[in-house]
Image 1: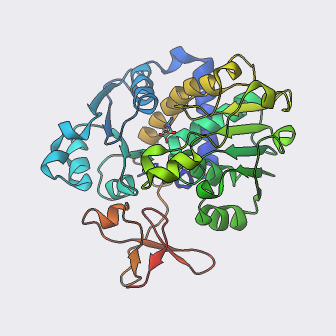
Image 2 (image 1 turned 120 degrees about the horizontal axis):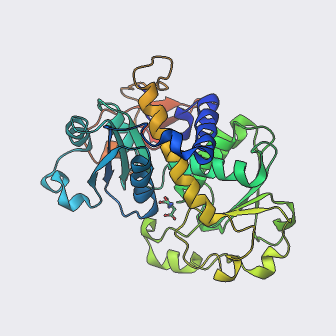
Image 3 (image 1 turned 30 degrees about the vertical axis):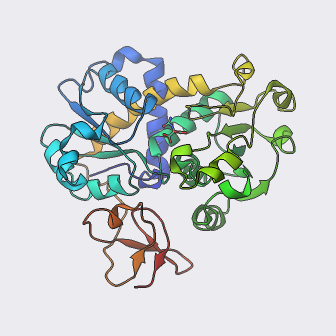
Length: 359
Ligand code: NCD
């Protein structure tokens, strides 16, 4: 069964198939209006969300399906101590596909290991957000005509910004991608993305200090919010919260056909004066999110019983050590530890990608 936990759970061909289907849905909405009639999507959101949850809901409604679920885990059996794995075993009896957002990293992977129906990761902690990635890929394709060959600047919170991590993983499989990282020291991209993704896949990347110095080179500027809720230290957040601001003066330095993306919500990192610029693509990006989720839901239902659309292996590993991330599901609930070995021989947690420390 195909789940979507990490962007690389989809092959490049499957990713392109979903993006192409989303484009066909945009062109021929009426063709798809009953595709998921009598099917149900459950949205299990353990963390606040506006656009992602409503985007899933409206996607399923546009396919003629129904939606159930919760948007506040305090109203579910979680408040009685139910584990994620038990919850999906139960909800899998009521729904054909489940979209889960969780503040605990790796929770959707743990869910997928026992779920009778496909699980879609709608964001897990600061780890991963693969449906935003599909949204971003579709947006880049529609704004620029192609994904190959782009230079993309990621600006803001590259440390906790899960949308950034997932998008870099997905872009690494396209041709000739150049990545520029624009972040203060405290918010730099995690090493595992630099090493296991950029260096391994041959994606050229460099780190710079200001938006201005790279603006003229960029085809895409991907702005992000500083993720206040992920900071353990409030002083550290205060030091970095106003690091980068995109305004009209900076936009004047950019290419005529550059696209500004932002997963939203924005706080203060893009001034409202930029919204009227035709290169500001972030509200179009929101709408693309609905279409790509329609495509994803229908493909996961189509592929459910097709053995040629399986999942990569995440083998059980005994005695490899312990995951060092206190926010990982394997340190929060009783799930079997799983690890993966990188090409360089390093061992990482399969749930959250953190380093494994010796027992
Ligand atoms: C993002 C998220 O939840 O990670 N939002 C979204 O899904 N559109 C980005 C964010 O919260 O900053």
